[in-house]
Image (cartoon, rainbow, N blue to C red):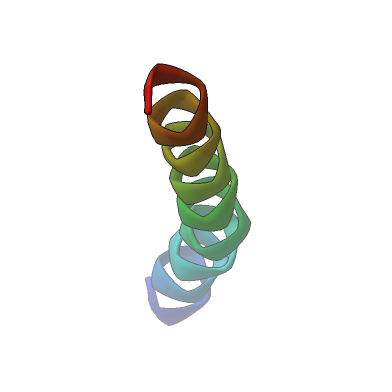
Amino acid sequence: MEPDRKAVSSTENPLRELLKGTLRSWIVESG
């Protein structure tokens, strides 16, 4: 189960960054 948790964290890291980038783009376009 440890590797599974690590895999999820690894996948969440880039996904979170991508979401943050998209959100920032949205704010910039909206602002």
